[in-house]
Image (cartoon, rainbow, N blue to C red):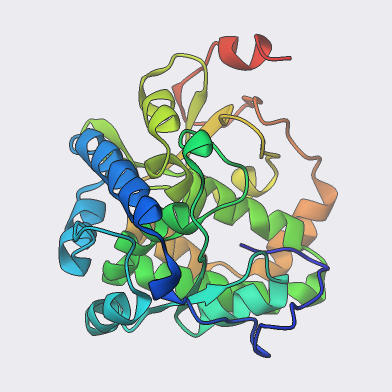
Length: 285
């Protein structure tokens, strides 16, 4: 939900927030939410990290209809001190980071159409709330998101926002986590998508590579299709530790001297959990 250079809409407050206006959702929109929720939640057990399912229960997101942010925030605030705020669309980077650093998650308030039920490029309320918010009820992941926002505010002076964006992309949006001898989903871009929920774990096409902070931040990504590489963390605790303990100033300096890597790259030193065939990507136009 971020973009570098856009004008603030007249209806938005100085921090870019707007009222959710929950009462304006139509019966058809509530029904479509329920359909999306039922379809996605039914396929996630055994595929998603248990912390996500726990978050669904804590926040009572199974309640019929599009969630009312006021009700949702009462439960989320009690769990971890976070809240969800509505925005009219994309927001500038500094606004995005400022909200995260203060435990506010920005969410779009529009819902996709039925014709977009399987895919849309701009995140909607189902992606933002169903995909992201359950893990904000997990104390460790909630701390990681705040740390990411604080790091984003610091990163502006290094001119490295595009590198830091890769960390968000490959963890918060499209991350996998180890669970015993298996892999589980946790990235919101995967858990809110029926097709990518299957692709990320089951398809032989993408690489699945152990998390390494610098390696990940060198890696380009796709915004228009399934990912060609997924990075796998050991745990939320380890992800938070690495984020908090890393001095990003020398990391950004080192990244300036290192070449970017293609989304499908496998390099020496990678912990390759699965080397993908890349058949899916090669078959696309």
